Length: 445
Image (cartoon, rainbow, N blue to C red):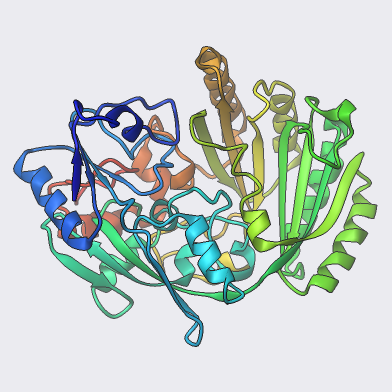
């Protein structure tokens, strides 16, 4: 274990996390290269009464990956990946990034359903549930999780599966980092190498027609789960297929992806392009690794980011009208309102089968602002908060814990909904002193 203190060379660079809004100064950064190092760091923190932040990819939007005057347990030395192609199993250490997992799995023509930015940490993504581009086809990341190795608040190393410590395994699948430091994840893999993609752009005036079609598509039980529909209110970006006159203009960008047979997907998406009649579009078969890194630069380290999100049963005309008005007011070139289709394999799992309670909603409405200049912070924060307030009456009152900041009115209930009470009981068993509280925190029963 390598320890970095405030007076050590490189401390200022070492303490930085992905979201530049959070400029904190830990008393100690513990770089762990083994499970034994993690155990030692957890025990050291408690011996010295240091608040604990756990850093995998460091992508926590509220800045839970760092802490003032406490200890950051950094898992960057635990990034090993092993794949057993015969058993279709991948094992990732707790500090691995999504890109590590994607590359290792693709060597065997396989995927683990996960997020869409490759420098995200696998641990935070998984423990929050794991929303991503393959979720309608294969389920959330937690639905492919087979086992987890955990360093507990007591400094013990335990394994959690369906049959070993099953309550802990239940809680880890959606309950966030409340229960310990996960040092190893074992996943089921799925075969996939190429995803046909339709990307298109419409004017805001055309958004009601396009989103009515989106609602019809996702609400139809006959819609194949291979199809994922995502629409974004955002400014036009300088993409190869985007006419220069649309760059910087607020509009509706729609990305429809197909995770099934490539020829079938290309035919279907071509027909959808013709039906949707966008002002700009492209349809291409995209290698999975290319798609998984497409957003890396846009959402790079060092941006300021703030987010609000929630789930809704439907894109009603009233909700769409509010979204259009908020879309007209987008400031930063990177800020957006994302409408992400749910359903499919997500809803195959019972609401109480894991700690992730958001199985029945058809849409996730995500409102992230990202900006470069700190001087833009007040206006961007105000836009997110006003946008969320405008759409909140149309949402179900809960939110995806990985798309929440630290200022929700009721963080526990918002993040965990119907599974909260059971999570509180599991928390009382595994972390009764709430040692691991820098997260969307579950307080012990």
